[in-house]
Image 1 (cartoon, rainbow, N blue to C red):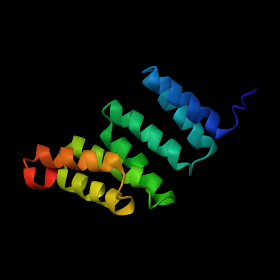
Image 2 (tube, helix red, strand yellow):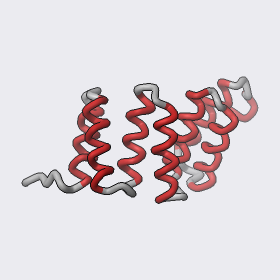
Image 3 (cartoon, rainbow, N blue to C red):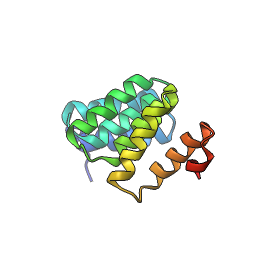
Image 4 (tube, helix red, strand yellow):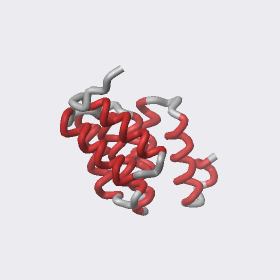
Length: 130
């Protein structure tokens, strides 16, 4: 098997491996390279958004997640990750809104249920958080 570094999936998979090894700077570079080759790839946008979110760059993460929605408006994952970033920024109203949009798109998406409950419980909204 040969790997073709001109294929964006090569960089996406390489970034995923680096992320698991907690080499976040290198993973970020790899995801950015994937996006240079395929700027509309929502999987790479979401992956890069998650890396920058993990290193505390929440506004940059929001930018990538929202950009993913430009190419895939019905992405429950993008909405969930937008909700997570807003939650980390302390904007719980927008966090709840995006988690609910994710659930409207895919009512069985477990991460959206979990993250919505987490935000609601964090706001002491026990009636809706359970």
